[in-house]
Length: 227
Ligand SMILES: O=C(O)COP(=O)(O)O
Ligand SMILES: [Mg+2]
Image (cartoon, rainbow, N blue to C red; front, side):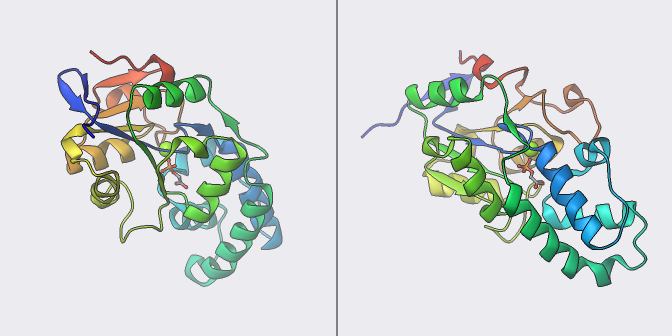
């Protein structure tokens, strides 16, 4: 069967890879609650939403280590294992309850699929957090593959997860569109050779998203316009 080929600013596109946190779902509330319960259990002070939005996007280990350092934990290395165990338990208990799908995501995913593009979700979130979240938000049916930050040897911004996801989709990177919300996604895409578009509503480590080069910066996923 021949593949659908769309073009985006002259780039032939046969498939798309979509990030999760900050791109499809505003998960800041889940992060704040799970981290808060973890810190209470460890007898440490809490963190606010602003800290969380600056720190998410590089996977759970990065988030937990940065959080422990931020609240003044005496020995981050020694606390890491109990913190991760507590965080995992609390996150899984509330996963999706304090999160909202961004406007335009359902319509945008349905449109990409109706145009004939196979889709994969690629997030730095652990796969065991990502899969139930997608299912709870009824987004899972759009994706041929879901890969978490623990699926491959390295996470975004390394290009490896994108290269492996393209392999799973059966496409080459230069014909596979990355849809993300952060410099992390864009750097991984540029290094892998994927064209990239960025959503403005996510978490970009505190930096304006317009400062990150991309084919387009969008307010909503359903605003993505092919040539
Ligand atoms: O850092 C995370 O947990 C998730 O980040 P991502 O879905 O934006 O890759
Ligand atoms: Mg993201």
